[in-house]
Picture 1 (tube, rainbow, N blue to C red):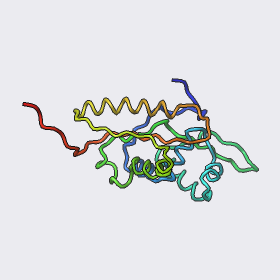
Picture 2: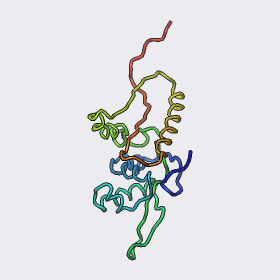
Picture 3: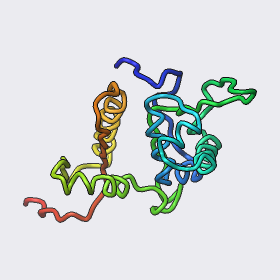
Picture 4: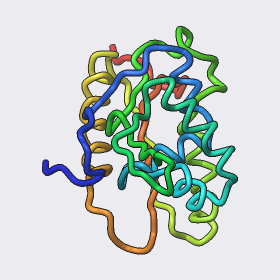
Length: 185
């Protein structure tokens, strides 16, 4: 797969193992900042403009992400005697490596809650595509399947930026109490 922007060196994947890291990405504004930085490095001013939020608010959230190893300064430039910092992601993809009970409470991070909120308007407009399927499989099979899904997410994130619409892509695998047929005799 070819490297697309953001135009600086970064890891393909980083495992989030600390509760503070999981909590850092659990905030919707910080998640949006990370998504914006998929395209290229940006200053706090550029991020504040894109997010239509005060620079001080954005600077706080950028600082939280940087302190937790999710963002880094990738270059600087002088602007009227002030050094302006460009922030970039430290990895294309972040994933939670530990069991959620070992990292943070379930309310701190839920991609599906974010996806549900973001997709409501698309649903109303008839522009939401989705599937849900259930399969009784082993934990090892679920893990192998998840690795394949992570590759697909990586492919999605590396697509060249074009078009007028930003699309969300949500994927997950989770244990459920979905009913199952009894084993055959």
